[in-house]
Length: 432
Image (tube, rainbow, N blue to C red; front, side, top):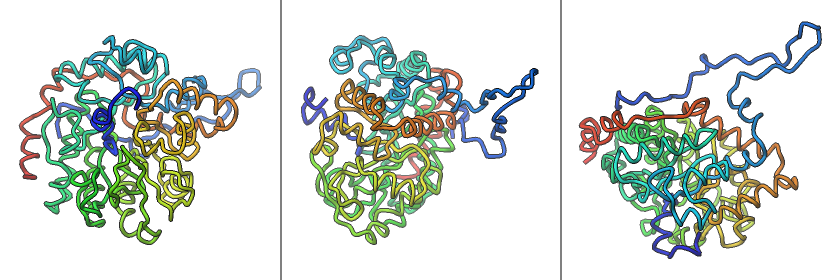
């Protein structure tokens, strides 16, 4: 992907490091434990007295059991798609993916999701038509994501309410406003058919000269940022949209932009616990759906020199085992320079999965990276168990957000009532 777009285009597209209550939208909130479907017994007797395996009633396991290896590998990928409708013919799709339309790209690679950028957005009816069309083109409902942090990074600003960014919200000292803005943002996204937001930013703006985080963070105080992040996660949850805390283990103390280089943060473990960790711990405590990795080297957390995106000690050891995060781990955009300094594109994708990542965002070379992960699974380098762990997490997120089981469809008429509503404009005004 880097070979086909210039630096300015890359920064505009990949700013995923990243960058990256509307009553008319019924949120698909996570069901409480008391409403969970009881498990089937492992076996059931037949009339002949022999035992056979019982069909599972869990939609995740039922879906997983029907999937081929190719389909499972496809679930890990979330690329950019080109066009304003599922059937838009684009030379970019052909050049990058060997398929002409977004629908054909989804079918060819059995994608788990796609990410939308401003080029995909014209007006409310068009976006609804796009997301409905994308969903109809996929056998398994898609995660449709975007970077709607508000403020500096707002991919859907052409159609959505212009909410203040994190720094403005953080300056109020009122976590309730972070919750309300996230809830309103989530309601608008969900009305448009977008079910995953790569927000909130959980980085602490430690270095005021940081070129990539800055005002995208809620502030420079870890405790205060943690309160804002936890509140925002709850707001997105109330809207029925999956939230993503980013960029783990913390991108706030660097003067190098991971879009164009590989930052190194020299915090000790004790400094990380005090400065970087609190917002991520708050996000996990609030039930965040996903956490995005950072393309940064953190020698005191992993001395290998690999960026966190490719680090098993950081993703599996620290995030999974020590912090207890059970949701989806998403990479930051894999077309960024920080992810590609040490290894070729195929190896980057494989190492990200081996490190513990579940969602491979914005692959730099989709055909090569899909082929590399598939080959790694077929050779046993990535075990079937490891692959199933990631696919299960992705399918579970889809189930929790009401996406698994039937094709999601949103209404342009209802979306028009929710997007830029008077209620949401009032929320924005409360911050200013």
